[in-house]
Amino acid sequence: MRARGFTLLEILIAVLVLALGIIGGVALQMAALRARHQAVLLSQAAQLAAALAEHMRANPAQTDLYLTLNYDAYAEPLPAAPPALCHGDACASAQLAWADIYEAKQQVRLGMPAGRVLVCRDAGVWSGGKLRWACSGGVAAPVVIKVGWRGKNPDGTPMVDDAGEYVPGVAQVVGVVP
Image (cartoon, rainbow, N blue to C red; front, side):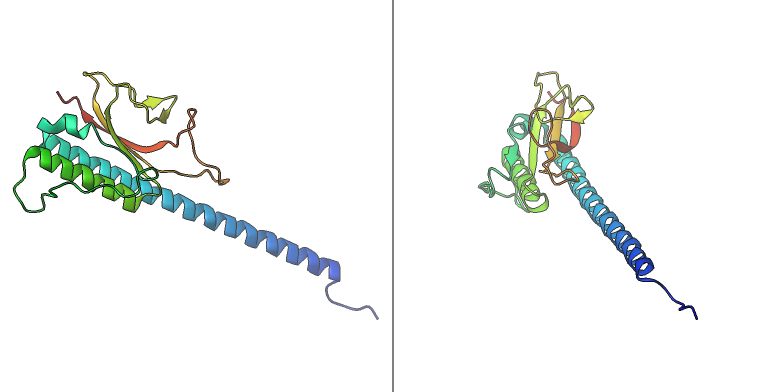
C-alpha cells in the first residue's frame, strides 16, 4: 500500500514560496510608506513656499530683507526669535518681514528632517532636469523660494546632486520684484 500525503520536499518548497511572498509584500509596504512620507514632505514644502511667497507679495518693500533668508536646520537647529512676532500687534514692514522669516524657519525646523529654506534671485532654477540650491543672482532674475530636506534614496544612501548637496524638494517662483 502506498502512503498518501505531501513529501518533505514539497512542504519545503511551499514554505519557501510563502516566505518569498511575505518578503515581497513587506518590501512593497516599505516602499509605499517611503513614498507617502516623501509626498507629505513635498506637500508641506509647497505650502510653506506658497505662504512665504504670499507674505513677500504683501510686503514688497522688504524684498531685500526676505532675500537674506538662507536657513539650514541641520546647521542652525534653533533659530533666534525676532524682537517682535507681530501676532495681532501693529508692526512696521521690516518687523513683519522678520516675523515672516522666523515663522518660515520654525516651520522648516519642525516639519522637515534637517530641512532648508532659501530665498534668492535665480534665473535658472533647474539644472540638468533637477532643482538646485545655487542661485544665479542678477537684479532682473525672479525671486525664488527653495525648500528642501535631507532625503534618502531607496537604498538608504543620501539623495545628493552633482555638487554633493542634498537636492531641494520645491522651488516656488515669486516673480520679478524690484
